[in-house]
Amino acid sequence: MHGFTIQNGELYYHSKYIRSQEYVSAKSTGTLSGVATWGTASDPCRSIFRRFFAIFTSFPSNTSVNIIKIGERYFTTSDIAIINEADIDSLDTLSTKRIAKRGVMAAHPSFQRDGSVWNMISSFSPRPTNKVISFSNEVEAIQHASFAIKKTYYAHSFGNTEKYFISIEQPMYLSFKRLMLSGIKNLSYYECYAWDENAVNVLHIFDRNSKQIMSIPTKETFFFFHVINTFEQDDMLHIDFCGYKNNSIVDDLYFDVMQTTGTPEKDMSHIMRLTANLKTKEVLLTDTGVNLELPAINHTFGGSSYQFAYGTHFSIGSAGLADSIIKYDVAHNTQIIWKEGSLIPGEPVFVKTPDGAVEDDGVLMVVCYDKEKLTSCVVILNAMTMQGIARAYTPLHIPASLHGAFYKTKALV
Image (tube, rainbow, N blue to C red; front, side):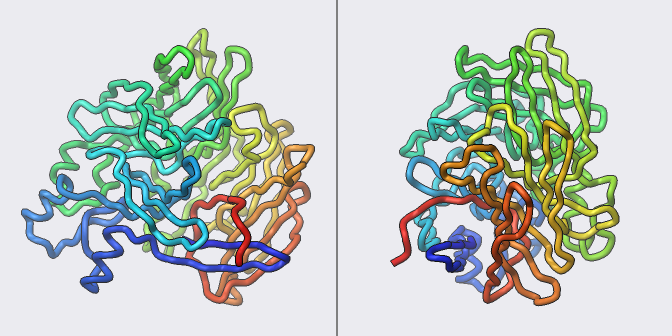
């Protein structure tokens, strides 16, 4: 975890490892071993029997993807059904909480205006089900609905409005047989999934008022990690997301690929919109052709009609990591790009002006790696103009980051 505190015109930086079971084990034994993770198989040196039973006796607890707030407490998350509580000021890991014994949960929950946090648990079973849940302020999971699915599909984020919770089924399915044999064959969790190019995406829409699930198949086949925003207009439901033609992007993110060929342009994400007519069950997919990932918006407009989305961006011809930050105007199909040649930016975090009158009145906080100075910095951009306001370098380099959030907390002593 990396923490940045801005106070009295100065920026303070600190970081700590999450005290997951993998971290504690590595510290005590001096070796990196344990259960399989998303892209890395378990320890190949363990006995064949220990590897076979590993998937049923333990599960990763290294929640290194996202940080969320439930009630007045903060938790780190990943695509597993475990969350680790953290002290937002000291970054100490306080506790570990298992939400489900055997299943997965998305790293990106949905947030309601009342502060409640919603997610979905996908079970590991030959007859899988998905359970729509929310968390109480005491961090207890409350089940609202469940629906049977033919296969467990990969889910990283959701569509969300005041009325609807939307899970988009994508044709990257978990093979229960591969999962059972993963210990013997030493497979990573990702290698237990298979892409079905002949299947189509399906919308599973939970109505918070009626408590019913509506499933609407699309005519499209696509992959995605992140929903940008979702909103309703009469009987139409609009879901904006960072979409890919297939799951090749996951293979592109392996370290050896990134060191050689990088991400080809055909595998880069585009801003896409699904428009579903809830009466006729017709679904239309629109591809803007605009590259954007790790999206951010003014969350005051989350779940409602909005105008601006921000995110990382690949310039034309760039095959390495994203090299710029983009501001996309959803209403007018225009864009502004911020870029500095030596900087590799991570996810932008939007912080609104407390009394801001318009949607883009605020700043973007972006952690960047400086290829020339071989260290990192935090860049503050004016979210309206995309011009730089301030910059602070860190005393050490920070690995390319995924997700973060802004929280207003107590002042430093």
